[in-house]
Amino acid sequence: MSEDSRQERKAEIAESLREVRERVDAACRAAGRQPEEVELLAVTKTFPAGDAALLADLGLTELAENREQEARGKVAEFAELRPEAAVRWHMIGQLQRNKARSVVRWADVVESVDSVRLAEALRRAAANALDAGERSEPLDVLIQVGLDDAAGRGGCPPGDVSALAAEITRHSDLRLRGVMAVAPLGGDPDVAFATLSGIARRLQEDYPEAVEMSAGMSGDLESAVAHGSTRVRVGTALLGGRRLISP
Image 1 (cartoon, helix red, strand yellow):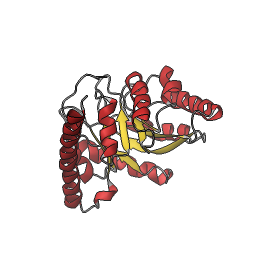
Image 2 (image 1 turned 120 degrees about the vertical axis):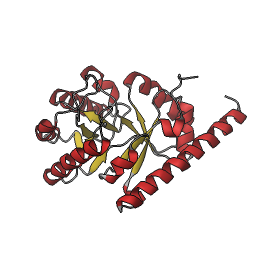
Image 3 (image 1 turned 90 degrees about the horizontal axis):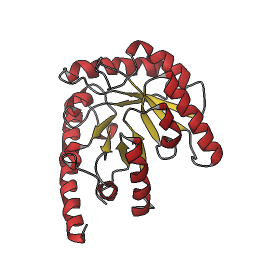
Image 4 (image 1 turned 90 degrees about the vertical axis):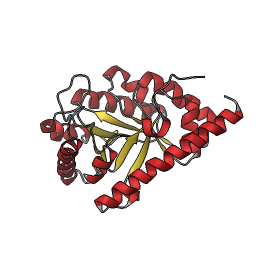
């Protein structure tokens, strides 16, 4: 990418970032909340490491991927482009247990823990990575709560959240930080996020450190903020429509 193209892309992303921040600020005002209560997580899936670098240049420190194989190479490339950038990488997509060893090498947070078997795989992988010096901190995790029965979207049934939380917190290699969910396709996001908010409150009563509620994306962030989201995951509204990774 030429320098002119890079600067043009940076200006484009900066304008999108301004618009997203305005939306979040307006949603917070409407909900009687402070903007600093809601973290912006930039979803960089299907976009090149260069775009992630531009987001970091613009002050975003939380970046997310949803496919482990794509993320692995992108995180490494990002580290070469911005070796001094203090960013945290989140895994927000469905994760197979056999990918646990790989994901703990690059992810600071896994937001899509939805089963005891996955939690155990991540725990073992995180422990090994800590012993090998591949990590310096335990792995932060969120329980993904399933708010519908759609196949392939993942999520722990609401009634199983307590048991999963107990398994996660049995070991020091994982740190339970809260819950995550995706609103059902075609459903009312207000209903979905109200349900998630109740689950999040009950979880925090038992685990005071589980303060995070990751909810809301480009199309429904206002509803999520109204129901207490502490992190909105925004991709399209920041970076545009999906495009293939380019060198």
